[in-house]
Length: 221
Image (cartoon, rainbow, N blue to C red; front, side, top):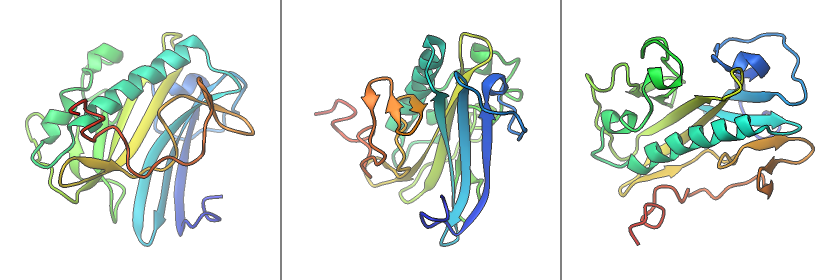
């Protein structure tokens, strides 16, 4: 399907489901996806030589309260980060609004590395700038107009085995940023013949300009 939609090269789709969601292993398996599972997918492919990297989380068939709550937390941390992206902000400013490793079950920031995370995207999957509580406070990088990077958030669910994972790609603009990932991620998606959020049917196309980092979205007007 990715090739049908114009992808030039699919490097991989990291598929994580069920009890493998927490803690997030970052590796593949042959586990079958089952009804009631949380499942998230990291899409790695390229177009005109440029890479993409974005996570989307689904509930398979139905969403439990624990799954819904985990998704809301991951989305909240994502929205807080996006709202701060603008020229002159630093990677330290962004990661400061993300939770400490101990708050979501890890011993330290090294153990939780790449869960609350951000990285440049371009000719390579991972480029500068890097956003991580492990390194960004000591080595902050200043954001400038034209930068393209991905921001990733994660939150484990209260059931002890599920989790939610969201990743958005953004471009730094003169006044803020533009979210360029097209597939919706504002609400937890329930997988089926059509996509649904907890609020009902969901269109498969989102506006190219996110409302999250505009004057109206920030409550300035």
